[in-house]
Image (tube, rainbow, N blue to C red; front, side):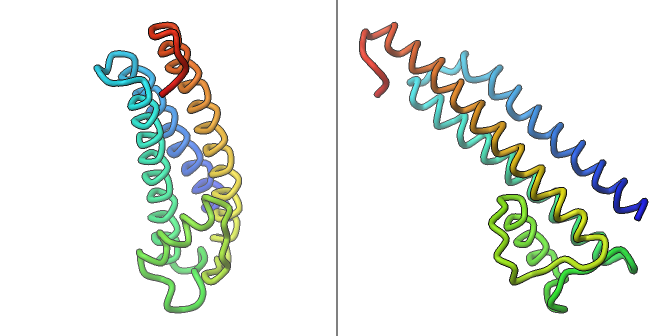
Length: 150
């Protein structure tokens, strides 16, 4: 159980750092881009999406790795132990979609629970970041042209 708890802490730490750095990088790069304001918002969305994909990958690799280590858990049914299935399971869990066709067993149940909660928090963080980004660039657009966003 200690191994699973440490894995959860490490996964939350790593994926939070990935998300923070991705949003910080976007915040640094977007104002200096020579692009339409609406293009900057799309770039922010795509950058945040890439961060989420990377975070899903980290959780998926961890689930796959821990499922390969005896006694830490597994993904059921038995054919779901390959990397592709672990990544699919991670995406389903991270987004709180939870189809249920692949189920965690043992310690992976705890990791899946943490991933679902953490994914929800990171998606909320992205939503608030994109809201602020749109407000900033749309306000700049309306100030510059006297019109609203295009």
